[in-house]
Length: 280
Image 1: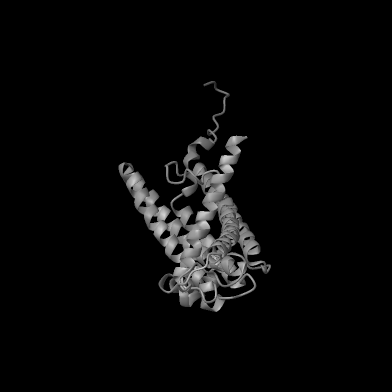
Image 2: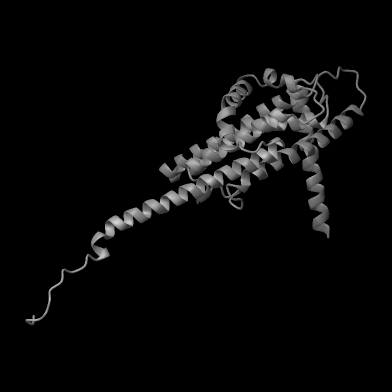
């Protein structure tokens, strides 16, 4: 060091506080991500309510779930324990019921929350291989339209089966024959009520399945089989019960026979179409 040189204190380099700066930056980035995520969820909730209820009021979104949660849970528990009494007020309607559409919307939103808890969107197992082509935001809307389309197709084929069944004369009573008293709106209302109950149940079951297979991948197919049987039994019992409840003067057995006959006709038509396409 020379005589005339001046010794200044070394400036504090940012690297000296690199850990603090990184933490601050990460916290700020996380806050922005949370804001974006919450905004996205609110947009999705608003979209689903607009689409399903057809009467969305501006200024309400995520809070609507809180306000209507108790009513939905009452419906869910009541439908699970006694679907016939639960859907009795909706029998024989000539319109698609607004409250049932609202219940379906809430069921879909609850399903989104359940699926986000186990990160279904990023699951790489065999469980979700069939629905991985849809994003978590698209899937509820796809499910909603599938329910409506399936209800209309089923109603048409079930009615066709009933006409075919009634075309053959018989001496025995027809009280236990296939029958659906009512309109296509009754079938749609049954599907809306069923979807409001079944979609969260199926989502929760899939979540449990994913968690179990992550804990022990060796039992994946065994768990898939058990959950599939459980969901199939639930589907059959509750969907047929919903059909019986929303269609006037229709017993469970009559609805089951109409449901089964509709499935037989749908299978026959699909088989014939595949056969004709194979000949081209």
